[in-house]
Image 1 (cartoon, rainbow, N blue to C red):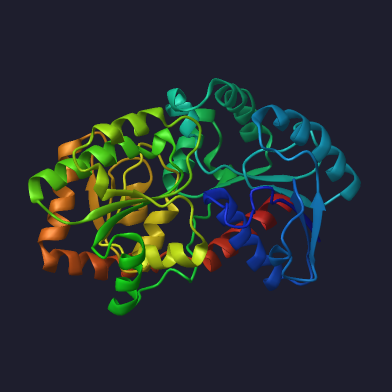
Image 2 (cartoon, one colour; image 1 turned 180 degrees about the vertical axis):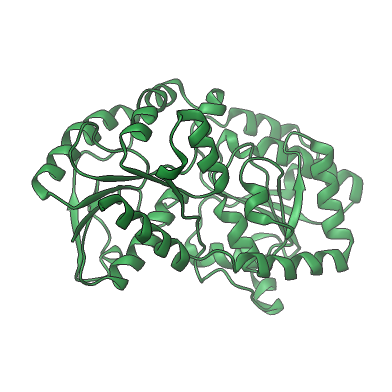
Length: 374
């Protein structure tokens, strides 16, 4: 069997949710199925670390898909021509996008439809592309996979897709995310947080991640509690962040907010495991891998009570209204002031995290592949 996979978002130290999903899932499947040839399709020369098995064959399609205006050519012409020559049994559209009107069976992995519900959060050119193409992708894909029951129901309702066409495969977290010793935690605190405890946000600094609200809630928490805790923001900026910059300058406790930028995978795992709590309150999320990474480390989470987050967290965290600053600040106060409550959530976090893994994801994706090519 020949399986072609879009791996353009698999980039060293630059992988967000879709890139992580792609790499973790399909590197596992390649190892588990040496009888299958996997054709990994990149838009730049891949690092050797991503070619981990003899049955992984890299293909490079130019140009680099850095800007949205390249997408119609890359997907509808260049990729279509490559697939026509390759003749795979199936193409895996890991970002949900693929050549339309193609005779190659396609499994589209659509992680979420955030742009349909919050169009105001995207640049107009990006929004126009998504709004034009994603209904077509959903309709023309032979099968669809997504990462939560929430996203499945959303795709069914928004695009009028039969539920039987959509499989839920969830996400996982790297085994690097695990509990560490108090001594190791202090080393990380000394390096990143001036030696004190901290809340941690991990993710791209994108409007739907609701970072300005998090900053305001943290500022309120600091004023009311007198705590020495810091807030660490680990992630790259995406599009315009003028609101975040302006707000930061107005906050009384701005010196207790530390932007680390993007950090490498090893340090991110240690930073996560050393946090007092993960504070991740997006206004829309298909899954939320940072939540699982935190829980896998035994770190309690404060997250939103909407979209997929309650499904991922269960009873292992504090669910808050992401639009309510006071509620978020009170959750910060509760999780830091009550040691027994913090320890209980830590135990629940580890238990909840066992429901997800990349091994389970790979198994479910393989089932979706077989369903597609039948």
